[in-house]
Length: 140
Image 1: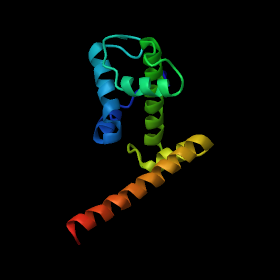
Image 2: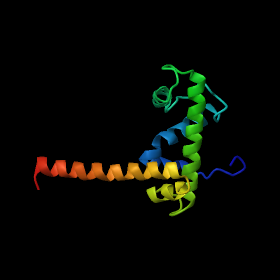
Image 3: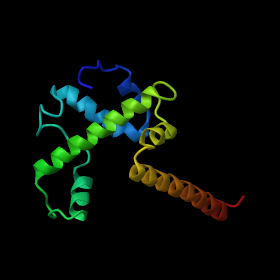
């Protein structure tokens, strides 16, 4: 992917999608400090540090893992999100990321596919529960 020229509209589309707004901030901060994952290592704000530390602890790491380990893991997460976003934008409706595009991309990975399916099902159940709760409280 390093050889490919970056599409200038990628950041615009990411900014308009709330799911990827934090990724967009990451890219803007990288441009401001003039570096990628390698440059400006300690200068840019880490977006997922707290969550990754908790996940690492949950999977058996120390309660306070090394900062370098968290930073490397965060770089991998951001790289994965970026690659998936670029791929999702290139299929389906050009320049837009939709749930169906993500599902299409992970369809051959049984664990990811099952997890996404579970999360989407749970999301629908939560929507129905909220709707029922609102109707009960505010009357229809």
